[in-house]
Length: 164
Image 1: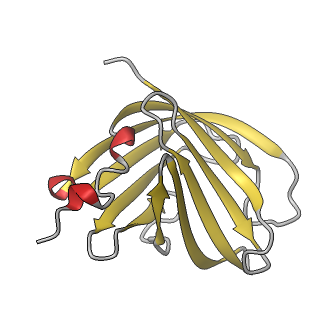
Image 2 (image 1 turned 45 degrees about the vertical axis):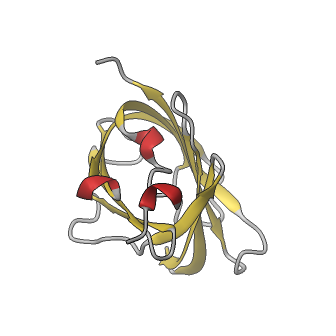
């Protein structure tokens, strides 16, 4: 049996716990011409599942600037045979829908995860990037409308630990 500790299964351990999350995003991430940035706060609770080869992340956004409050849910699972993580997202804004999995891995403290999708009627490659940091991790989402030749960032999340 593969020893998952040697192949990246603990790469996301930095995110376990309770967080304040400062979001900076384009008001409409589905519109490639949107230039208006908005900021808002959220909280996040992340805990391991499946004996450490996965975890869930529950995010609460009580006052978003672009609509009603919502709850987000992320499931991250490690595949030891491929040494990759898959990341699924769902939210109360789109009930019953699970986004296509983002697949990738970490090199050092930098994680890159990719998926192809259709967003706002546009074919895009979606990229998540993580900076693994126990104190202040960062997530960024970018879209490519030209098969990965150029990237347009549209959302960042800066995390800080909550007391208790």
